[in-house]
Structures are given as structure tokens and as C-alpha cells.
Length: 156
Picture 1: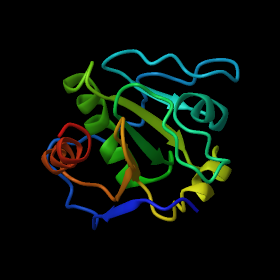
Picture 2 (picture 1 turned 180 degrees about the horizontal axis):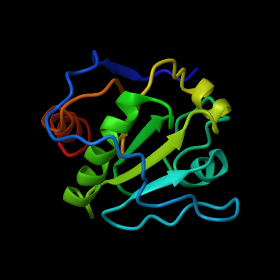
Picture 3 (picture 1 turned 135 degrees about the vertical axis):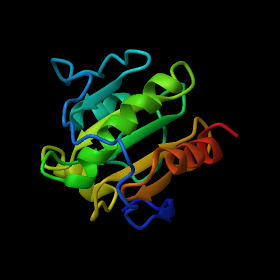
């Protein structure tokens, strides 16, 4: 398991106005190559796409492959708190378009990747700066709290 600075958050109370939408704004790109990141959109990645777009999780050394800070949401379709965070991630992707990229990885479809990062609770968010070590945040949280974490970890 990779060593990261962990930030663990208890699941937050349901924020007013959050819907339980499961729709992702972008589906996985076809093929095994990296997924095209559309600015202001959330991109769903397969394990193979993650490996070529974000980081080769099969190695012990951390090496981010992107050129902008990123948020990776580890989620499952059946997870209520994950569904609560879906619209928040879509808003974050729009608000920070051109500054960060936002990805989603389904833990049920990407079990080797999830094990590599020690994902045991979802939603789990990997906050990846362009330089340095990523941080992990776990649990549903209000948008304001999530934005604070992004600002502190990725846009300092």
C-alpha cells in the first residue's frame, strides 16, 4: 500500500439541496488508453485509464502523470454518501475548470486499484498536487469543506 498523508473525515450531515443523482457527466473513454479530460467535467476512469492518465499504481514509487492538480473520487453506484457527493464533484469540476481535473473510479470495477491505495471506506478522495505527495480524504462532506480541502492541498 502506498504511503500518503491521510486526512480522514467523518461522514458529514446531508447538506441541504444535495440530490441523489448517480449520473456521471462523462463516461469512460473507449479503449485502454488514457481518457480525454473535458474541462469542467468529471471523467470516469477504468483501471487501465487511471494507470495511463493519473499514476501507475502497480509500482511502489508515486509519480503523477498529469500536468494539473487532480481530485480522484473512489465511489460505488450503491453507496448513498457517494451519490450525495456526485453533484458536488460536478460543481467543483465546473468551478475549478482549468485549475484542477476531476476523475471518478468505481471501486467495484477497479478492485486492484482500490486495494493499491488501501481504500476501505467510500467515498474516498485522492487529492493530487502537481508536485509532492497526494492526500486522501474519506467520507461525504459539505461542498464548503471540500473546497477548503482542495484549496489547501492543491491550490496553495
